[in-house]
Length: 154
Image 1: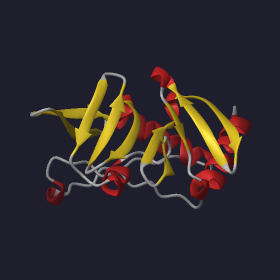
Image 2: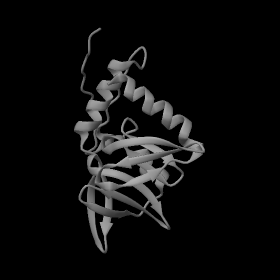
Image 3: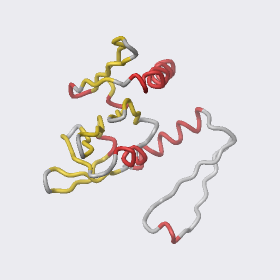
């Protein structure tokens, strides 16, 4: 199986770059390619601290959570407020690394330290920087399946 690269000029994109991966099936090789492309893309999300606005590198995000009226991104450099809905933030994050664990939280698997079943269908999740969170029962089954699948690959 070969990999072919092709450039198509499109003025409608402006300064953006759109990458489309076409394959007969979504297999492990395609997943690895998508993961590498996402890692190298350097995605940014706009956030702010007090009145100053910042671009947040998504690779620095440990946890994104709905916090009252706002969404907070906990990063290795501190906490940032994102003035956008959690679902819209989730759409801009790489689904290979970012997983929704409840209606109000999304975690970055790159910073996952440990997870444990604590009973009642809830998973306790320990992240780097001492962050401890819990999944909701609604998401626990799909999280458990995904975590076990990732563990098997290692």
